[in-house]
Amino acid sequence: MSIELISILLLFISFFAMLAYGVPVAYSIGISTTLTILLNIAAMPGITTVAQRMTTGIDSFALLAIPFFVLAGELMNRGGIANRLINFAKSMVGSLPGGLGYVNILAAMLFGAISGSAVAAASAIGSVMTERMEDEGFPRPFSAAINITSSTTGLLIPPSNVLIVYALASGGAASVAALFVAGYLPGILVGLALMIVAAVISRKRKFKRGEQVQLSQVWTDFRKAFFSLLMLVIIVGGIVKGIFTATEAAAVAVLYALILGFSYRTITTKDLPSILLNSAKTTAIVMFLICTSMAMSWLFSFESIPQLMTGFLLETVSNPFLIFLLINITLLVVGTFMDMTPAILIFTPIFLPVVTELGMNPVHFGIVMVLNLCIGLCTPPVGTILFVGAGVAKISVTKVIKPLLPFLAAMVFVLFLITFFEGISMWLPNLFGL
Image (cartoon, rainbow, N blue to C red):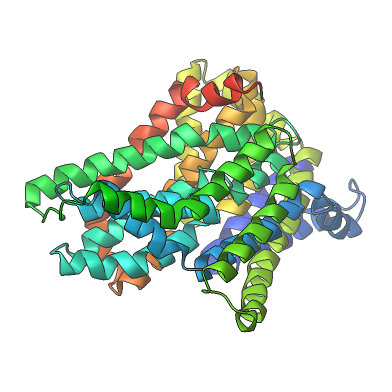
């Protein structure tokens, strides 16, 4: 057995063994990378390479967008945006049968898109909607299942931090602007699929219909939510029109969210220290994951793992349909036990050469990958949103699994629809020439 093969085996076995043992993902990535370099020290630049690659991995102007969007999301979460969006969504779709289910989905889509965080959407929307839905006769497990799955749509609808991470991992093959625009239709499609499932279940169980809302009330709720919704137009419109870059757009988002919070009088100067501290903690976690993942990505390139994987798949499986199917299944499995950021950074260099060889656009693959991993966020054993949603609803995870299944099935259906119909993702980027 060659030293190269032993190195690859050591890398993956040590990584997954540490994950199984409960070692945090970032540490698992860094330690397994270091062990592999130590094994093959004679053929590699040296152990200092790990530190160098970790440092250079985050030396990117594009990554400055992440702490800004995290801070903007925290400001939005504290700024009373959730209630305004919920009231607007309720006036729009609340009068339909099982309407509060649609309200939860629509509000989560809007809030997730504005904040760029699935966790923020699950906690902010779930904390308000769970009680409202229970008062209207909806079981807590059902409302939790809706909240968990719909919260992930904000990772597809821009601005989204994970799309920025994918742009970095793609090595410039996909621009942030193109990814942001490409995420709109898939994100909306996921939301509509979830609404269809909620409608079928609501009619079957005869859940209560909401009160009919007058047009004047719709207009009032829209006016209250207008400036929150305007943020989406300013940020994405500014990027598409070339007024500012994604990083500059993130800084604009912080300023806009801060002004909005003070205008609504939901944020005071006394709140700023805790907001900044929470944002710094979240940013530190994300950046450390990126650091270690970039070191592992460099090791992948050094060991020619992407090339080996491309050659193996293309030689073993001749049907492109089966290759895309295998990649989707792999990412779905990966998403069940690995957080989204390291999964994108680790598996993008492996699978992107394969799909581009088969003619898939890197932007399209980015949307497919993110949706795959969104499903993983809703599934055990490591589904972050699953645990957040269950915690907000104050029920055990086991009680959520059964009502969650039809919603997950809808997300998987949309995933395969997007995978094999590239136009769903690429129509808007092509329209805007991105």
